[in-house]
Image (cartoon, rainbow, N blue to C red; front, side, top):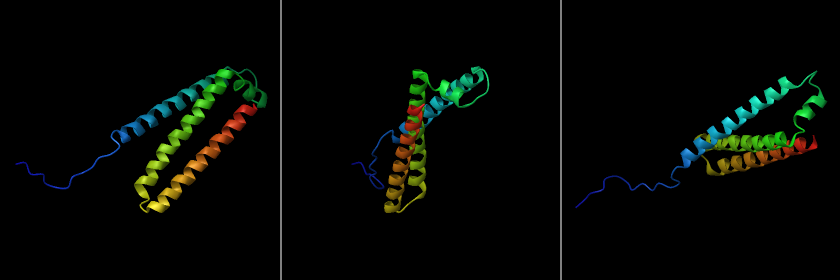
Length: 121
């Protein structure tokens, strides 16, 4: 007869940590690539960098799409990081839930603002 010592541990959310780790890495790579593309665009722009030059850089449809993807990636990257901080260091469930909701509302608001600015160009 087999004897089980200790408590029976129920593990839920298999690979949850791996998924978050991968999201952080993939979004970081996307943001790094965007930075390189933006630097190349800035260096390749002749003349002074005024409003017209910046508007010209972001006027192309492919650049708007890439910026759209990077803004979403930045919001997702920030959500995973801040959520992990709240989960690790804030123990009262009510306070942690309130901080999660505040963080989500803040990120959605910032993302919406970024899209308004992007599509206004």
